[in-house]
Amino acid sequence: MRFLIDPLARAFLFTVSLLPVVAVAQAPTFSKEQLDQMVAPIALYPDSLLSQVLMAATYPADVAEAAKWSKANPNQSGDAAVKAVANQPWDPSVQSLVAFPQVIQMMGEKPDWVQNLGDAFLASSKDVLDSAQRLRAQAQKAGNLKTTEQQKVIVEQEPQAPQQTVIKIEPTNPQVVYVPTYNPTVVYGAWPYPAYPPYYIPPPPGYAIASGLAAGLAFGTGVAITSALWGGANWGRGDVNINVNKYNNINTNRQISSNQTTFQHNAANRKGVPYRDQASQQKYSKNVGGAEQRGDFRGKDPARDAQRQQAQASLQQRGMDPAKERERLQSDPGARERAQQAARDTSRERPGGGPGDRAGGGAGDRAGGGPGGAGGANRDQARSAAQARGGGDNAFRSAGNAGQERQQVDRGNASRQQMAQHGGGGGARAGGGGGARAGGGGGGGARAGGGGRQR
Image 1: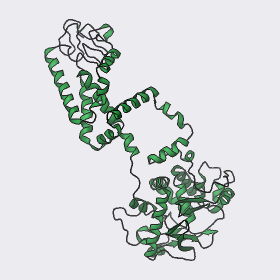
Image 2: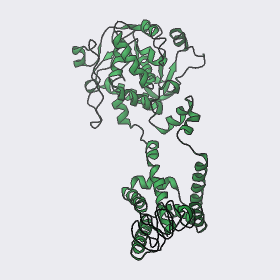
Image 3: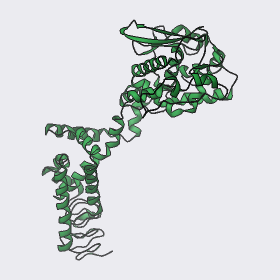
Image 4: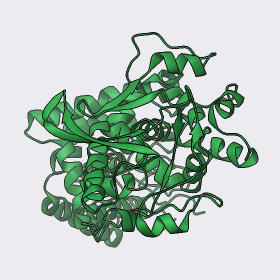
C-alpha cells in the first residue's frame, strides 16, 4: 500500500499537468457568428483591398509597427508610401497597406481584432471569405451595396463553383481605389446575431463622412495606385490569388517566382506571435528557424519521453486511454480536485517504512535505519522492489476509477495515523534506525527517536 499511494498521486499529477496543453490544443475554432462579427468592418472593401487586409492580419506585430509609421508620416500614401517602407522588416502584405493610411491606422487601433482575424484566415481562409459573401448579401438586401461612381458591384456565378453566386466589388477605375466608410450596425440591416454584434471600428480622424454614414456607405478621397494591391479573392477556391507581376513590380527587393500565384503565409514574419489553433501551430511553427532545437532549451529529456510512451502503450494494451482520461479530468473538477488532494496528502507527511524524504524505517533522504540516511534500502532499491511487486503498473492502474483512487488514499491516511499512535517508524523526521536527524529506536514522535540523538 505504501508503494501504491505515491505512484498513484504522481500519475494523477502527471495527468493534471498536461491539462493546459490539452486546453490549448482544443481551443475552439471561430463560429459562423464570430466570423461575421469579425469580418463585418471590411467585408464591403473592394476584393483586392479585402484580400490584402486578410493576408496582412496574419502578421499582427508588423501591422502594429506599420500603423505607427503611417501615423508618423501622414502625407504618405499610394505606391510612394509602399516604396518608402521597402527596407522595413515587415511582410510585403503589411507594407502594401501603408498605401491606405485609413486602413492601416484603423487596424493599428484594434490589435486584438487584427490577430483574431488573421488566425481565422489561417485556420480556414474559405470560411472567412464565405463570411464576407454572407455579409455582402445582407448589405445588398438592405439596399446599401450598389454600384457607384467609386466602385462596381458585380453579381455572378462562380466559375469554379457553379452552384455558388458571388458578389464582387471592384474599383470603377482600377488605378484609383476608394476605401468605403460605414457603420456595420447600419449597413447590414437587422443583425441576425444579437449575441455577437458586429465590430465597429471608427475611421481615424479626418476620414469620417457623417452624412454618408447615416445612409450606408461613404467614400473619401481615392488613393491612386498601380501595383500596391497585388492580391485578389478567389471565391470559388476560398483563398487569395497573387498577381506576381504587380508583386514583383512594387517589391523590387523581395521577388517571388512566377508559379507562386496563391498566398503562402511566411511564419518567419510572425515575430513570435503565437498561433491560435493546433493545426496552425503544427503547420507553421516548424518553419521558424531554430524550432528543432527549441525542445532542448525547454528541458526536453528523450529518456523520459521514451518512458512516457512506453507507459502509454502499456495502458492502451490494458484498454485504457490516457488522452480520454485527461479529457475526463479536464471536464470533471471533482476528479481533478481528488487527484490534487491525493498529492497534497502524500507530500504533507511521509510515513515510516516507505520511500520519502525525512522518513524513517525506509528508503529516503534524511531517513534513519540505514547508512548515510538511506533508511535500510536506498531509493533506487525501493523503487525496484515496488516495480517487482507491480507498483509501476499501479501508477496508472486506477487512473480511470476515481472511487477506487479515493478509497486507496483513505486507507493510506488511516495507516499513517495508526503508525503515529503505535510507533514502527516514527513521525516526521523520525526514524527506525540511526540515520541523520533520526533516532535509533522503532517508536517516537515528531523529530524524535527511540534511542538516537534528538535535534
